[in-house]
Image 1 (cartoon, rainbow, N blue to C red):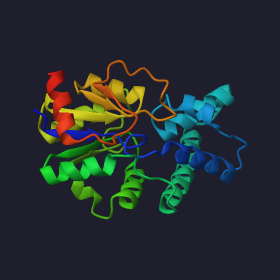
Image 2 (cartoon, rainbow, N blue to C red):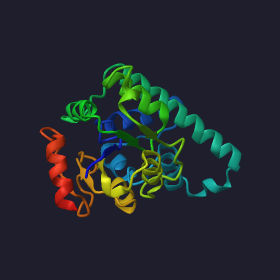
Image 3 (spheres, helix red, strand yellow):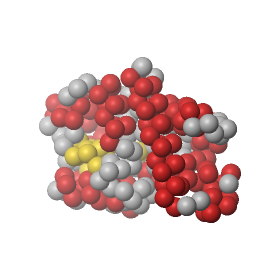
Amino acid sequence: MLRALIFDVDGTLADTEAVHCAAFNHAFAQAGLDWHWDTALYTRLLEISGGKERIRHYWQQVQPDMTAIDAGALADTLQRLHDLKTAAYEQAVQDGAVQLRPGVLALVEEAGRAGLPMAIATTTSPVNIGVLLRQAIGTHWQTCFAVIEDASTAPVKKPNPQVYLQTLKRLGMPAAQALAFEDSGNGLAAAVAAGLPTVITPTPFTAHHDFSAALRVRPDLSGVTLALLQDWHRAHH
């Protein structure tokens, strides 16, 4: 029996990746770096979960001798770049640059009316989640979700299943009674490793990923009702 829905955030609840990419580029310019991530490069960098991790990975590529930099100075610079990026992303979201993906709000509202617990399991930062969902759902957004696990509570990033295992533990139910919603290969790997049947809604950034382990792959959540999810879940078990 299906007893909970667990959502990833970036790419799954909302098409955020293009806005994240623009925010990274804004931060680089503000910091006086001549780095620029185009769509093709950012698509490859999305294989790395986590913003700071993504910057570090890229930095290592363009400056292989970066290990010579003092570790403290390196951490400070990564943090400053990430702070600039977060501020730019927040501003863009507040300016209306991000919308929920088709079908998301209808499903969240239906699950809410049915009293089905919902959770968030993401590797993004709490501030990113807050600014996005406040704008998209309203100031009451936190009351929609029984559990919120994010980069602050689950620091080991996807494809590691930590965030999903912690979410299930806090929901107090086995993986077989829940469904996960993801948009990426790393997200799917994390959910499946935690035992969760997973519905995938790819984005242009993730369409090339391997989704063979998914329960279903849909262009988006339009027309996806609780009754349909119950059917998929029953068929899976």
